[in-house]
Image (cartoon, rainbow, N blue to C red; front, side):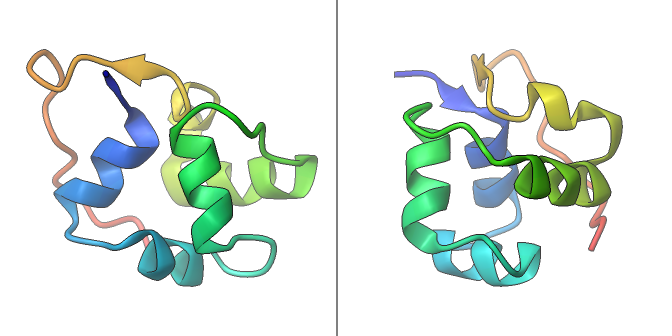
Length: 79
């Protein structure tokens, strides 16, 4: 199974789903992150706004699957 950019970002930064949910703040839980990573939950408008704040312009693509061998891991911490 391919990773989503969200899962790739989380793993590259050594974050658990719970730690990423805490970093993203209100409206995010570890279980919500899990569902988003599995593409079983679309973020609400408020969550999409927060994802854009944290991940920038790539927020729309953050839930898309990627081949981890073809995409470089993020190196900048945007918290």
